[in-house]
Length: 173
Image (cartoon, rainbow, N blue to C red; front, side, top):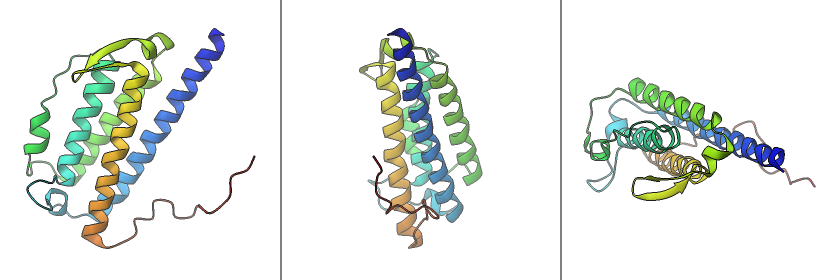
């Protein structure tokens, strides 16, 4: 039974890392289309720029995966993620995000079953390590969807996330 639990944990982590990589790939595609000015543009005062979204993702992934799951200090200042109106170039933001995601993936990959099952408080919530990973993956994906939507609105173009892949193929048994 223990070997099966370890296999399930490894598969869960592998699939989570795959999804993190997919989101990062999509951010790269979006950022390649945008100018330095566009990454800080807001649709209105109630909206966040793509720059804010990336700062927010770095903060959230750090707080959940690196600090809580990885048992490191939590030094997040969430309000600053949304207050920024500039201060980082496109390449700095991409580098920051990639670095944060890579650090988070290392923590995930290094987690054993006990760490995945252990519950802890993070941002006022009580999650197991698996719950933390689920949050990180879905939160990342959610904001990547916003980044893609904002990029499409700015550029009026298909981003080609799945160019070269036939998405009409039926599932096989």
